[in-house]
Amino acid sequence: MIEQATSASSIAAMLKTLQSHAAQASGQGQNAAAGVAAPATDFSDLIRQAIGQTNAAQLNSQNTTEAFERGESVPLTDVVLKMQKASLSFEATLQVRNKVLKAYEDVMNMPV
Picture 1 (cartoon, rainbow, N blue to C red):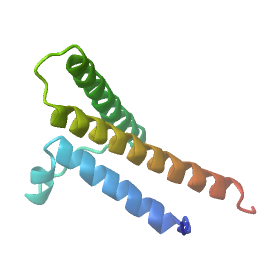
Picture 2 (picture 1 turned 45 degrees about the vertical axis):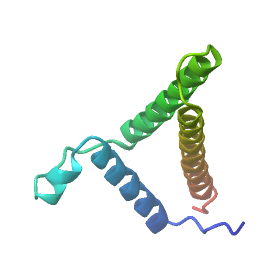
Picture 3 (picture 1 turned 30 degrees about the vertical axis):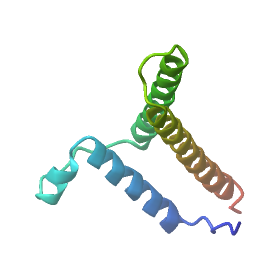
């Protein structure tokens, strides 16, 4: 795997992407396109929301799996789909965490 160099522009691009996804999820994407200014969002709030969404996906997957195991009428495709969504969400969160940690380490190792 080729590791991308972490720079201020790549971090800014990642933050902008996270903000646009958060705006789309909260329905603010249409307001921004119409020229209405969206409220400022703190990075920690975005991370908190992403972790919350990942946790919700994990819990939803777990509940669906348990319902299937109890013999309730839950299609196997729903179980597998929710497990994959939860796994993908977790992996994406993990990758963002790794990129932020790498950027922090790079900043800390900069000569002053």
